Image (cartoon, rainbow, N blue to C red; front, side, top):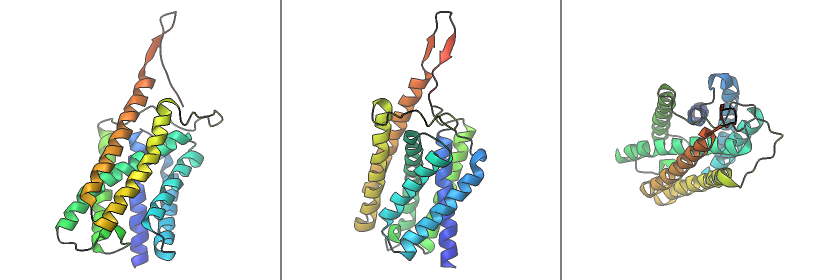
Length: 239
């Protein structure tokens, strides 16, 4: 029963994060539904094997999830690498930002141990359930109010073109993506070892704000228009 519960909520966690990743950049969620279900089951199996079967630390689990998600967007959905990493980073950061307030409420109600390092239990399930539900609602609201960025064109992208990973805005996006992994790992470390989630939360908020700012900047680059000699107006589109 514990194994079934762990796998079920791990799949639900992954789905919630993918919804945030996809909706934040206006990608067609329904078109990828079976691919998404497949990768979410894979993520759940990886997490169970890493944390329960092998007993690896939650940091290795998160790093593995990040890499699996990024590889999924890159090789299955054919999204350019810098954008794959960005989507995963934003989804993770947004998910953690939603999760922290729920964590604070649950711990304020009398949870004595640090639930962040546990793999089961009612407290963990409560946090997972409400975080997943809130994340799905946020994804729905993004769609409802037509939010999200549009500079990542619908895949498949032209992967034969060489990517400029560390130049210009793309470079800042790539570095911020790497910083997101570091910040989320640091926040988990502070929560697990020092029960200092209150101090870790601003780190995640800061990195999510940075990713939002850089995405806005990248969006503005694609929204610039130019007028040709014959007076036609064109929008710059990049893949």
